[in-house]
Amino acid sequence: MICSSVNFDLFMVRSSHWAGLQYQREELSGVRTLLTWDDRALDAAAMPGYGVGAAVRMRHDRSMTRIRAAALSVHLLTATGAVFAMLALLEAAQQDWQAMFLWLVVAFAVDGIDGPLARTTDVKKNAPEFDGELMDLIIDYLTYVFIPAYALFGSGLLPGWTGWVAILVITYASVVYFADTRMKTEDNSFSGFPGCWNMATLVIFPVEPSPGIILLVTVALAVLMFAPVKFIHPVRTARWRWLSLPLALLWTVMALVAALNDFVLPDLIEAAFVLVSLYLAGVGAVQQFLPGGASRR
Image (cartoon, rainbow, N blue to C red; front, side, top):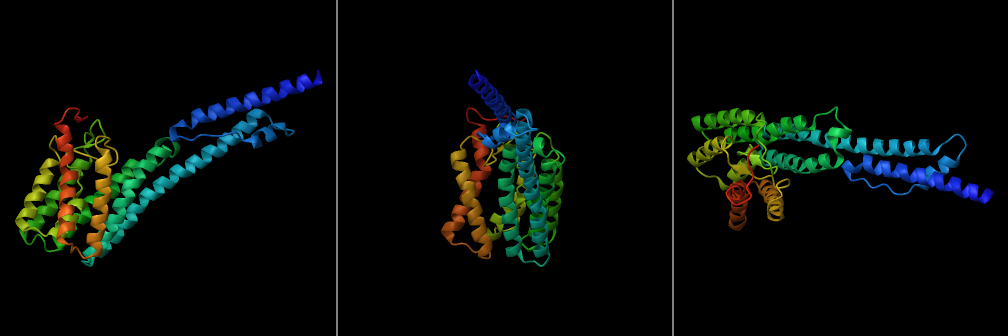
């Protein structure tokens, strides 16, 4: 009879612990956290002054603390983009375009990884006191728009009035676009050119087209910011991601090589750089006019 009572009590303890673990799995499913059996919780339940519920709550609190720390660390990672932007701006002020673009490439890499990390850790739920999207937009305007526009103006690629037209068009159109709540499409692409002037400038520097061509491209891209034309996000746009994401990574490597070599590229690499850039800029429009294309929200 005593043995039966002990077995029954042990069964109840383990059943309660299992229910607690199930609760933890459901609570943490947003970050894909899978908790396994923790015998320490059962040991704590057997200690005087502790109950099974208290042990489960202790485990849950520790898990949530770790998740919150992970979410906060993503915000801190995003914030480093402001530091890289300042470093790039300081180099631009010295007209060291090579060093400026190296910092912009670093900022571009951070911008590429902090988004998936933010979604994995569910920062809106686990660190809601910081607005990661606002932080990202501020940094993106600096690294994608403001500093590259200054580079076009200060480098001499657009002399005289052409440089003034370019920087005014780029900065004005971009700030309006960044505030447009309709910029995203249903498949997580962009409606209109998403203000990636850093990418455009990184192609212009090694290719060095004529000022007229640069100004024409600048005005065309500014107009496309408000046109109903789709531009992909290499990470978030699922359609053809098997091709777009590797090409985006290849583009980043080629941009880094260009910056490291003072924007002098062998003809073959320069041609590949231009072709990959054209793919990333135009594939969204191709998808849009094929069956299954996404519409603007």
